[in-house]
Image 1 (cartoon, one colour):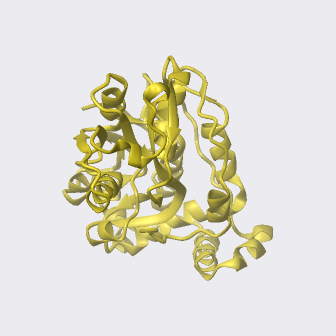
Image 2 (spheres, one colour):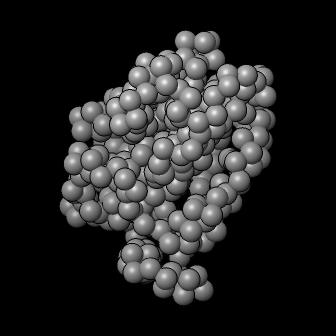
Amino acid sequence: MKVADRHGEGSEGRVHVARSACGSRFPRLLRGMHSVLLTLAACGALAFAGPARADELSGTLRKIHDDGVVVLGVREASIPFSYFDGKRTVGYSQAIAMQIVDEIRKTLGMAQLRVHEVTVTSSNRMPMLLNNQIDLECGSTTHTVERENVAAFSDSFFQYAVRMITRRNSGITDFPDLAGKPVVTTAGTSDERLLRSLNTDKQLNMRIMSVRDHQDAFNAMKDGHAVAFVMDEPIVYGFKATDPHPDDFIVTGTPLGYEVYACMFRKGDEPFRALVNRVIVRSQTSGDAERLYRQWFTQPIPPHGINVNFPLSEQNRALFAHPNDHALD
């Protein structure tokens, strides 16, 4: 298990400065009451500048204050959301996580608050959250209604389709073509549930393999142990783009469904939920989220300068304009 430790502003000395949602930006937020309430909370927090008192804290914020560290669950190969580039954890959702950490620092008045990263997988991320082994996970975790029974989710930061990646010469173009064939997906994901439901409902007799993580699943398809890897569309585009022979693969298939990613934290912690959503709303309504999207999906990314080439969709543009925490299943 890879574990990294950041002190203060991080290994690169970067500080993510979140732009205020108050002032001239405020009228744009009147489109949705959810956004208005969160923005008012943000403005109120700014009006009463100064760190919260320790005796006023509860839940996750109290734990972080007392421990002097915030524990982030990070992914090893969820390109370009949260992944290890050979030196550190980077990615679109990792950048969001670090913006949240900066907000925690300001709220607690702890400029030297440490960040401890723990690598999680699709299978163990929820147990680790419930066992207090991580405080926050912003990777590629789908917000579903079922998961609300065990964890809380922030406003969504990404909407996507579930599709598949296969070799260009496989002859596979859509999900019915997988009948009777070996197919791989990542264990513990909502995609696995969708794939198994499709298999039962359409009686496709697919031989479904569930493996530990996304990299293992892509390798299984690439090595011929499966004919297709079914997963979130941006994830499979990430693997295609970063493979040494990207033209050998295609992303295809009528979407099995549409889902959203969100940050995950413990249930029943409204102060922490408000802090996390304050950061996400501010980023999305200020234009910072769109800038961050371009950085990770339409420009060269580390470590090899590959471009995922996944332009901003109308669904994500609408999400940024109207922040919300709605599951799509």
